[in-house]
Length: 218
Image (tube, rainbow, N blue to C red):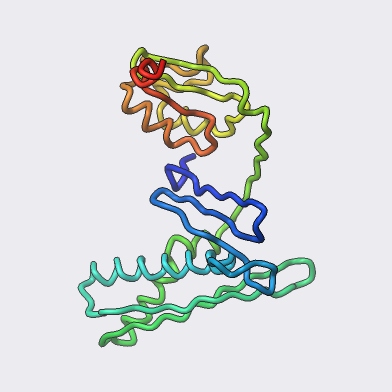
């Protein structure tokens, strides 16, 4: 199992209705609810973010295909919306995607581009089998810390925080092995490789520090 993002999208909310801070790998932005729902509309709401994901993935996928085929399409626009209906006890969500291509294209080319749009990665996620897993982190989960070092860097492990150890075992088995004690072998790879794997931890169960930096602070 491998996550799509090396670092998870991080969200937090305080007492201000309903302003959410979203941190991603290269910055942050605000999500909010519209005024009619009690928010201040200071950022896109969750449905808008979901639709934006589909729109941007569609446009990028189409642009990649168009460039690869050498087609003359200077601009692509897309409108995306959604609605939900009830059928007995099942809620059915339908996404409508309207695409406009600027440039001279044949009907056959447009039909092919429509197929490409339908196959964009986010479309496949929305139309596939989706499962949302939830983990509630408790305050006491951060208390226990175990350290492993190779003399150059030290990896800090919070065992109660760890939910995805299988990922480390799969991606870097020379260092992470659940069948061994200790399960983290700091001599199994160079420091840079270990650091890169630690940075992929989605829960914060693993962190690291350079020993020289720690000594300098003492």
